[in-house]
Length: 218
Image 1: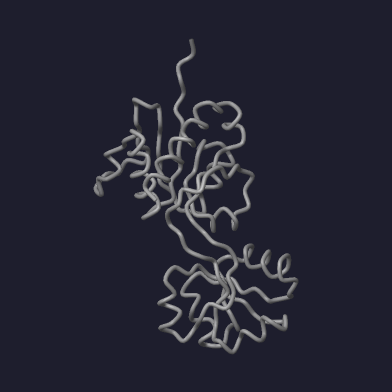
Image 2: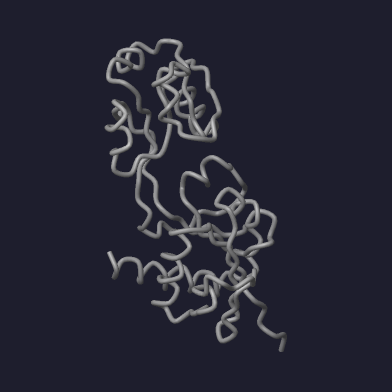
């Protein structure tokens, strides 16, 4: 009988990874070394369950999964939508909830309503393009930024922004407001398409266990 192979999980770094590992612990899968801030290890293993974990930057998680370097990924829905990789999105994990929104000064609302040609600053050009061109059928100029997106409408670089909103406090402090909601976001579990076929039984069981654990903790 062939030895059971490891299932490899890519986790987006930061709070999302920490919350994901707490969820895995609730179904009996442990990697205590991941809690050691001084460790230089890159791969963490639960030998009992033949599971391997590694941390990566969020936008890289769908890439690892699509190309089979990871069987499974845990990452935010914003990253999945922006990267547009050929992967299966199988489970909403229920944490990391926020919204992708169009925001700006309140005077920009009319420009959106009348579908004027405006500039939109964002870290998420694909999501922004899909929203304006496919959903609203509004032509816009998209400006890609990497830093504090809220600055763009304040200094006149753009009329509005497309960005993640959690509490909205940063917007309020800078005289901006949510004008339209693009899509609700949360942490999701994604699976490599080949892995889903080859390891269907194990991955399906894992999905069901994580689903129960996330619902019980809701």
